[in-house]
Amino acid sequence: MIEWSDTHKTIRDMMHRFVEAEVKPHRDALEHGDMPPYEILRQLFATFGMRDMAEVRSEKAQQHAAKREEARAKGEPYVREERPESADQVAMQMIPIIELSRYCPGMVTALGVSVGLTANTIMSRGTAKQIARWVRDLLSLDKIGAWAITEPGSGSDAFGSMKATARRADGGYVLNGNKTFITNGPYADTIVFICKLDEGQGGDPKDWKVLSFVLEKGEQGLVQSKPLRKMGMHSSPTGELFLGDVFVPSDRLLGETETVSYRTGAKDTFTAERTGVVAMALGIIEQCLGLSTEYAKTRVQFGKPIGEFQLIQLKLAKMEVARMNVQNLVFRTVSYT
Image (cartoon, helix red, strand yellow):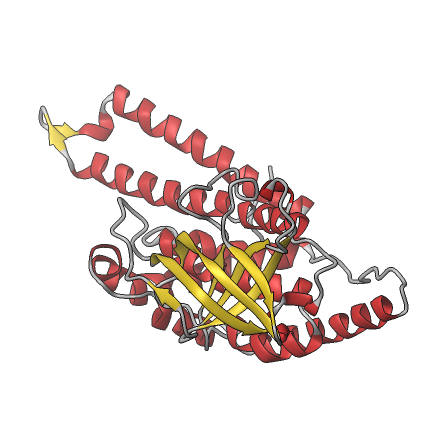
């Protein structure tokens, strides 16, 4: 049976106290009001030293990008030599996700898209100059990021049904399209916009090359909608993006090359995103189990707490088994990442 180490438990308890003090009191405003989650997330970063790591990660990514560019200029393959994260490092990343998900799992989504999907996409595909320009502010949460791929007519078939396009123009590209269900879309300062290159080549648009660009809030022709009214996850602001003849210079094309299509990169991004979902599920389940257990102790029927009845005990036992199964999935993710 795998369990959290004493160090992990200490960090978990500290994170739990932070969430109880800083997130729980604002839960209604975050989930049922109009309060964006970003200031609390910035406070979380400052409290636990996550903000201080932004500079180091950004510089390291710039160094790798410079080597990648040098290899490309020589026509040589570039293999990034880097030690994989240790199980302890991965566990430390999981703990904040679990604790935040007890009250506001949407905050995890907002955080993950900004410092995860958006920043990691730029780090993995951008030039050293592009990384220096955008990544540090994203990793520190000084700027909020969005990753825009989903469209009104394309969901699971994101590439085949994609209609957003980029056309070459003097000095850059002209972008057009509509994106929807974009996490952080209403408030994003930096947006990775994924679209197809329209070269006027005809043929099946499904086969057109997929490129990614970096947009900034306030671009002429870019409209960011207000947050959508959703059934849940309100602490994750979600919106639409409308692009009408948005001109961007060539240095906004990630990697500054059309030779590498983004199809594979996007799939890798989806894989990384899903590893955090199991940790979110664990946080939700643990909170539900805790509330159910407390209710079973305090709800009295027939002269005694309902937790003393065998049927209720069976329900709670099944919930605990489910919790343990999900926790084991978290530990498997930690062990095999």
